[in-house]
Image (tube, rainbow, N blue to C red):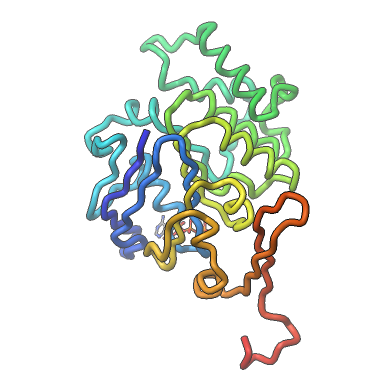
Length: 263
Ligand SMILES: Nc1ncnc2c1ncn2[C@@H]1O[C@H](COP(=O)(O)OP(=O)(O)OP(=O)(O)O)[C@@H](O)[C@H]1O
């Protein structure tokens, strides 16, 4: 499925937080949303599933304006992994993942073999099958985050939206989660702070700066030292990994020993 933001402007409170964003996530591609804190990444993601309505412009799912679709229609096509796991007192991991099947249930709401097949597959993909019977409220932050990923996978949507999915994960699971997400073959929009993960796993990136699209394109073309300095205020040095040959960014912030005037 293609997700297109066609000149989207978003207002929160009384402030315009995103201005005239023109961005497309192509079918099956991973699109990274990058930018400093408060630059508008979460707001843009929320617009992609209709939780935030543009004051100008349109969000299109395969050419259909999301404003014309019901919540259930959107939920069948777009799965969302939120930034912070909700409290789910009492639910086991498997029951929590089963909630991802809600948009596919009939009016009676019974789950069937097909639902459980998707739950089992999703738990295996997200690496939480061994936690299936554990209560969610007794999991670590990272385990909860992987449970949320499993729920999103169980939703069987065409597109996946993720807001900082790696923020509670250890280094190994960061790679694991990104590899899993990229391997699903879904249209994926993912807000990320880790530029190196974006370089490694995103097909395209969009860099937001104070609510405007500052750059978009292939990550290696977009994440130049000049752009990283302008947007994030840090020095980036591209280095080629001696084993894999892939490009990574060495980041250097202002030194605490540097005089103020040089910062
Ligand atoms: N509910 C809200 N009401 C009013 N303003 C909000 C609300 N949520 C966010 N904002 C403001 O909107 C702007 C964009 O926030 P947003 O959460 O989209 O940024 P972000 O790039 O995802 O940030 P972060 O990296 O810190 O998660 C910020 O200035 C923020 O203060």
